[in-house]
Amino acid sequence: MSRSTRRWFLGSSAAAAAGALLPSPSVGQAKARIIVIGGGFAGATCARMLRRADARFEVTLIEPNPTFTACPFSNSVIAGLRDIAVQRFGYESIRAEGIAVAQDQATAVDPQARRVTLRGGTALDYHRLVLAPGIVIRWDALPGYDEAATMEMPHAWWAGEQTVLLRRQLEAMPDGGTVVIAAPPNPFRCPPGPYERASLIAYYLKKAKPRSKLIVLDAKDSFSKQRLFQNAWQQLYPGLLEWVSLSNGGKVTSVDVRSRTLVTDFANYKADVANVTVAAGRQHRRTCRCRRPHRLVPNRSGEFRISPEPNIHVVGDAAIVGAMPKSAFAANAQAKVCASAMAMLLRGEAPPQPKLINTCYSLVAPDYGISIAGVYHPVNGQLADVEGAGGISPVDAPPDFRALEATYAQAWFHTITTETFG
Ligand SMILES: Cc1cc2nc3c(=O)[nH]c(=O)nc-3n(C[C@H](O)[C@H](O)[C@H](O)COP(=O)(O)OP(=O)(O)OC[C@H]3O[C@@H](n4cnc5c(N)ncnc54)[C@H](O)[C@@H]3O)c2cc1C
Image (cartoon, protein in one colour):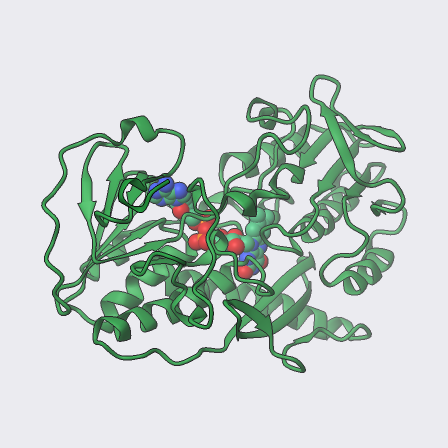
């Protein structure tokens, strides 16, 4: 596609993109017009931090939903330990900071005209654009698993209705039933997520349906915090939770929704409740819901600017950033660094090279927390591990240490959601 005609489409309704175009704004440093697409941990944080960096910035946040439902701690909802209502956050505080929140979906970006088109037909011009639309699920990744199948075999990888559906299915399952979780290959959003989910479902089954069984079919041979999870499973859920690795035939190759069967190369697993996160496994390939891959500008990773567009930045799950995992903590950290860099660029200053931190807590039981932390820096347009930095919970910690980490996890959620939405 030539540069003069390039236009990216977002979502599935590109046809709805036609609308009256606003006149192109003149580029003024002080009154810069910045559009942020996506009101999740990355986008909402970025919008707020931009406004705080310079109150003269005209910031518009585009988000189709009136409230945001957070994925972190949604596994506790599935286990019946938490109400879905406490996962929901509105945009009132963000509006109160002077940010225009457009409840709409961005359907197309025209980088040359610097224009975003919304599903409602409105076109908005920008000086700078931040893409933070999270992930998409590839419905063609697993034979038999499509959008309709999610009503029988929920993925619950976007929090909300799917989370509640999986919870209801677990409640309805008789004691002695079999729950099967299909865990995806790398990379995917929230690397410890499937294993925290398995732990908390096992916690629920142990308490409420002790004759039941939970099988995790994995497309990998190793996973995040593996030793910590497996030690805890041995201690807390012996005989209840079984993990089947890739080498032992854990990779799900297809599903039959009607019979609730997950098929691997070695066996068929019939489930009473099936949770399929496999379809999310390769969704990074379609980041930003734009039909082209994005790469950060080499050696300018702190700006989260994408090549070759000089005015477009991408943060959060939508970004391909190397070693830094896709997490809410990472999305929030990237958004802050990006906002600060953008403010400097608009003032004509050169942003410094940043260092970013990610910390990820997982609950194995309500009073049993484990964590991992990493530090990242830009190397050749990607974020690489800072060697020797970061850490992980000790393998042999006593129960009060695990209980303390579970408390820290709660505090982490409160802090990040307050910083993003509160
Ligand atoms: C079960 C589970 C548990 C998790 N637990 C943790 C945890 O404990 N800790 C942690 O750090 N991370 C956790 N994560 C990961 C975390 O939820 C994500 O990494 C994080 O939400 C990414 O933030 P984001 O803003 O990039 O994307 P999202 O949070 O997905 O937000 C994207 C937003 O963009 C909007 N959007 C999409 N397309 C458009 C469009 N075209 N126009 C306008 N808006 C659009 C969406 O509606 C959405 O609101 C978990 C994830 C899962 C699935």
